[in-house]
Amino acid sequence: MNLIRLKQAEADFLQMFPEGFEDESLVSVRKRHNLSRMNRFAMEAFAEHNFFIPDHFLEGLVKVISRSSMISMFEKPRFRDLISSLNSSDRERLTSLYQELFHGNQGKAFEDIVEMLAPYKMAKWSLITIGLAYFRPDEEVFVKPKTTKKIIDELDLDLVYRPKPTWEFYKKYRATVLEMKKRVHSSIAPNNAALTGFLMVTL
Image (cartoon, rainbow, N blue to C red; front, top):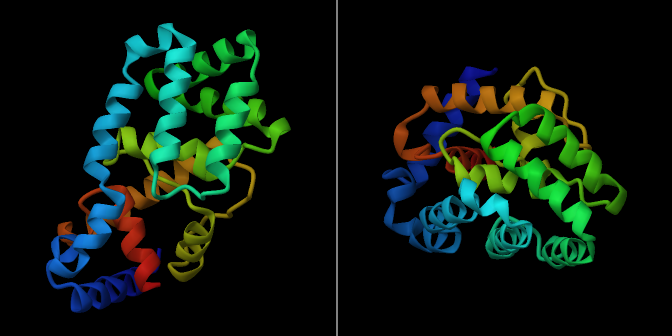
């Protein structure tokens, strides 16, 4: 990790926004993304009791993705239509996999979700990681391809991005983001999405 570049990015951001993400000039940004509201919604949607009724859980999953300010407008209806098209068996399987992703064996569930969505061309980094990022904003990360590739290149990270999501990359990228979070001022990293957002702006 290029710590000099990271600290320069931190200085550049704080020069533009002295109060970090609490800066008055970022009010519109905070309102647009409203992470605290999305966190509350995700906590409700992905609570363990919701997984007992696949239709109920999947409806919540679609709503989380549809309401997200970080997901492409093109991907939202495509994901919604995919979920609507699944038969009951596939709906139960996908729900079971997400239950594991949020409350069980994350690694295996992550890989299995990718394999299940791949034939529909919906195994996208953004779609698979957005729920995690909203559910546990201080522990999980949102992988936005363009931003992630830029962060890797600019900060000389020992990571190789691939379009197909893998648990191995996610785990390493998450660990790196958490390490970076320790190295910068808390005002620019109130959560992991804010940290990668600050890097997107400065890099």
